[in-house]
Amino acid sequence: MSQDKTGLNITWKGTDGHNFWTGRDGQIPLAIVDHCMSKGADGTRATLESCAAWFANPRSEVSAHFGVAKDGRVWQFVDLQNTAWANGILEQPDLSLPWLAECVSKKINPNRRTISIEHEGDSLDVMPEAQYRATLALHRFLVAATGLKADRQHIIGHYQITARQRANCPGSGFPWSRLLSDLAAAPGSFQDPLTGFGVSEPFASFWRDHGGLSVFGRPISEVNAGGKAFPDCQAVQWFERARFELHPGGVVMLGLVGREAREYASKL
Ligand SMILES: [Zn+2]
Image 1 (cartoon, rainbow, N blue to C red):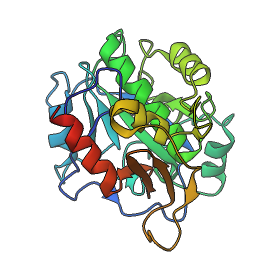
Image 2: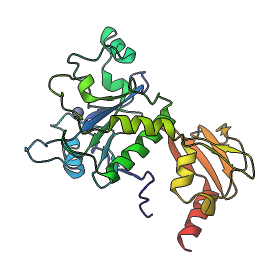
Image 3: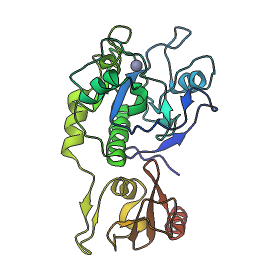
Image 4: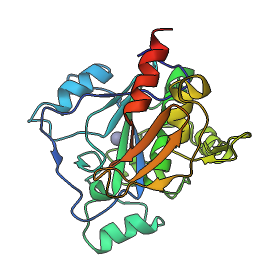
């Protein structure tokens, strides 16, 4: 499949089974924590590739859910349902954030309640446009998939949890105001002008990013609960040439008819 410069294309990498906890110990994701990779263990600039190797090394005892490269590639290392090891050290935490204050008072590891995103670059780097577009799309997807609020109470920097050791993570180069205003200004949902059916996230982004009208056609149903026919599926929506299914962890998959439509389109 070709890379869509404006859409979201996540490549699963994993951690070779190391450096995360299965599940979230009864917690759900309440916040996104943004990081910059800065330097790797050997003192050179970290990259998506060096992060992947470090997260897969059982000695590192660190991981993040996602990494975003300067060229816009997005790699996933830990499933959203599992707990990555990125934000576990409470050091003068920002107690104005209610969910984080509760982590302190109830002794909940912040990793249990967070989704972590690493970004290639140092704390003073200005984010290249491709990287910005990719992390915007990723944030948009995560907000839609988890229902967390797209504000500075719920999209935070590592420095708000670990204030001394990580004072410069993600650093002054991180585009907070642009990101927050883009997230607020551009809800992904739309209504089809002919059929009248609405499409909301995360289906709307998937529809746009993978070919839209020419591949899937128009929405021809409401969103329905997954129901008994699809035991692992949380929601279903029909399009003229596709059935979109929402699976655990916010993953959108296509029913068979949709896969056929996309294969057909790739041969045109
Ligand atoms: Zn960090």
